[in-house]
Length: 319
Image 1: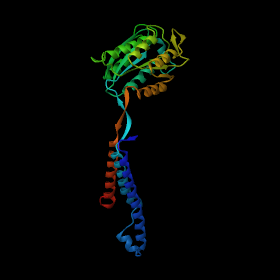
Image 2 (image 1 turned 180 degrees about the vertical axis):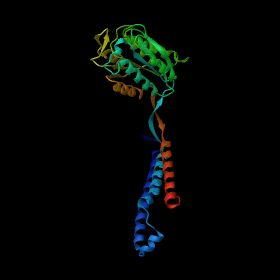
Image 3 (image 1 turned 90 degrees about the vertical axis):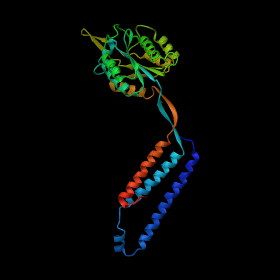
Image 4 (image 1 turned 120 degrees about the vertical axis):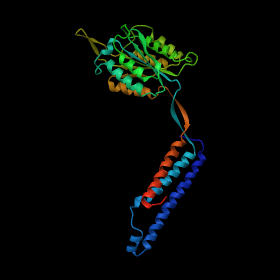
């Protein structure tokens, strides 16, 4: 935290002086009470009250003054601000290997559920789109702020939806970049700040070279965050015959490193949710230093109302 007017913090010395004066007054009050020898009469004219009640209004009042002084010094802090026209493309692998049950109930179902949670956690003003890929890639939902359409698209994710088997990571990146470029009329000349979140369980087996697509993402200044989802022991059942489909994140790691995105590994539904949450905390935001004096002033006013309420409730007077 920084201060735009740090010299004003010297006023806290005045608050400290008031606190010291209050403590001194309480000590003198105790001495005067002891000098009053008629204790029965003292109890009638000044019945005993719980000691802590007497100090609450004063304590709140002093805290209010301290907070107002801090606000008066105009503190600033870095805060996360959603980027204007921020666009996030979510690409999900729908190849046959995503039916492996090493992640309950299966990789694809778990990926769909985590994707729903992820997009719901993004700010409403973010544009979010959806790409499905296997041997080829298709934009199921163009980027927009319509979360209903996005949920419908996630529900439609299924094996074979792209019509071709395989794992085309490069095609998924290219399709995502194309969707970003067609966001609006300004996108061609003023590209929106964008990110691609790509989830897969295997290496590239078809379509364009993933590293060529990664180079295009670098040129477009679009980081690609990749998620390697599954375990080494995954398999799918085909006609009663188990086919091993171990997770392979080597290509995904290379793509993330090339584009400046992050590479993540998840071997369970819980880990995948954590990965999405981690990505969501940084995607589409910029850090901006802002004046946060209102926070301290607002809290100071709350303390002031607390001091007034306590004084009126227990002593029938304002502090």
